[in-house]
Image (cartoon, rainbow, N blue to C red):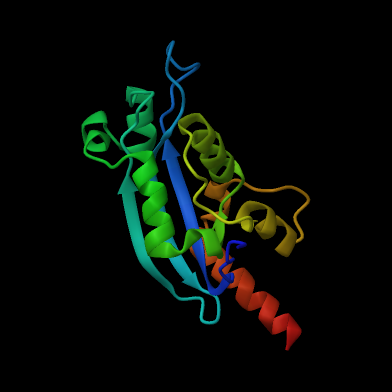
Length: 176
């Protein structure tokens, strides 16, 4: 019997921002960049309201938090050691946020690529469905920019979910 496919949930967009281990220069031998924090919130498409804001610490398995990483992210090895596994974080996304059946977004393509890379490396099921919104790209298109701008520039006005909410409202007004 064929597997029943759940319908895509289009009422809310799952907005994701990850932090990963990093170094000033190349990683030390035997270490690789991996997700250590998963920030998320739900953006209600109809109203632009943001809810369910959460930060999930993820315990690294193939790297250590460097002093450079702590300066950049404010996260310490001691903090992430109390986090959950990457696999558990993926299950949480699926169970609490219906991530496999929901459109998700991030600022740029790094978060999507990092999830794909880490899922492959850990032989873990990819926790998202196929529909990803690259807010960095969408922001540039919506504002007629010749190039994408970094998050710092975009954050002069809004945060990631705020950017997406505003863009969705602007698109609706154009269609009215």
